[in-house]
Image 1 (cartoon, rainbow, N blue to C red):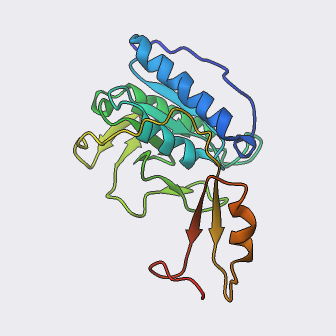
Image 2: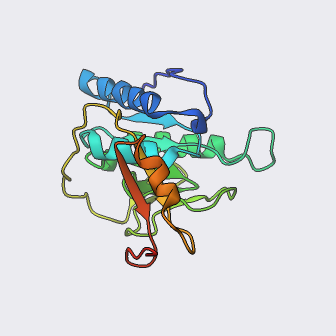
Length: 203
């Protein structure tokens, strides 16, 4: 059988996370992996920032030990609460032999998604997560985990020392005159501009 250990790392809405707390979670997961006595990790997480956490873990941690992030779209007092099923699926994924080497994944609504590709695609639907720019990953049915994609080739890992840099995201709007971009540049280390089309911006 599988022995499970529970850790109450934090109790905070995901939307309250800042870069320091997100990095602290990453460091806790890294420490558990490096201890060498853990064969899988499950993280229950608020869905607002679940994809950001999964991406960070997928890109910065080794892939040998499966790390599975999950959550719930409905609260436990709502009919159809999805938390218990998602948690059970995540535990199945973390314990499955076929999960070793797949790194961080998202288990949600019966689907298994690569942490680098998972996206929250709906604000309220129970089946909120998908991977629109990737091949199907896998699924969980009655505790059985099946993968539709072969074990991925090891990807280059990013090695940041922290998440201390401040980067702003500035979307372009019709008739944008650059005022918002100019306003945020001074207080940030970098800016990502969400432009039109293939990168077009107003004059």
